[in-house]
Image (cartoon, rainbow, N blue to C red; front, side, top):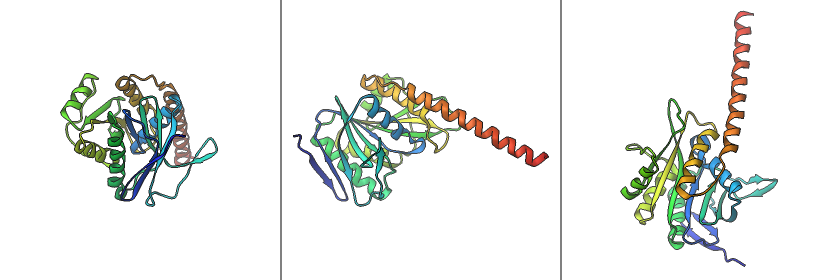
Length: 239
């Protein structure tokens, strides 16, 4: 039986198996739900095993249904040399500091290779490009070799920003990938562009086609809705 180990920092606690020398990916729902969408795809495509979860009395009262079974809303998965921290809710700001500390402590104990956190950036017009930032100049060089544009200035909100600073203090390499989104609504097409970058960064093969298909379905429904609204508006104005 594999031993479950607890890591606790202030108000947050990780209950998980130890996985050493892994790359850690963090996905939580920010604008466009990029981290959440990519995370769920990784779970399915890589057939990841749930190895633990994070709990806190400050989390919202929530359970997630997955194939009819209630599961914890902030779970930890593993497949090969990849560990995924996947949240199905926005981490409250007053919990973020302790949350990132407990994740970094877990990484330090397990000698994790690096952290990749997933986020998004609002743009007026999309070209489905993925931008990046890192917690060191060495990290920027690696991202540059992948031909990723670097965000030179700005703020990184939420758990992504705090993870970058906390990993820097612990001398753990970390980077953040930003998908382009237009608004707060789920954006599978933007998430697919992040998956393509992860495939190159980690030498994995995750099929992003399901996200592109989902994006097309959403776009079709939105066009149909817009046409219906325009039709109703026309009848009211000129009827």
